[in-house]
Length: 129
Image (cartoon, rainbow, N blue to C red; front, side, top):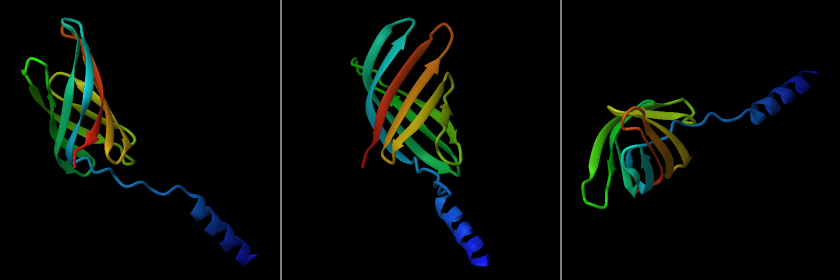
């Protein structure tokens, strides 16, 4: 009976999902983006997210958006994620981001702003090595 109990406990331990480590977001991520805005319509270009610091499950950095006219925009952002990294959010001074790790080197993000200058943008970013 005792052996059966230990065997059952061992099987349970092996079948339990492993705890995922917190993702490491520090680095430069870049990829094509598409944005639609209330005031000036569709815009495309490259988005580059630079995560400069990560402390526990929080991070800081900046997102640079390039435009065909060369008028690039850089905005600081602050973010956090759940213990398993399945839910990642961030904010800048005007809007909010929802992010999702596809794999260790691929990050999807969407950004929204509400109000008079409403806009939405999504992109798939790849970690630059």
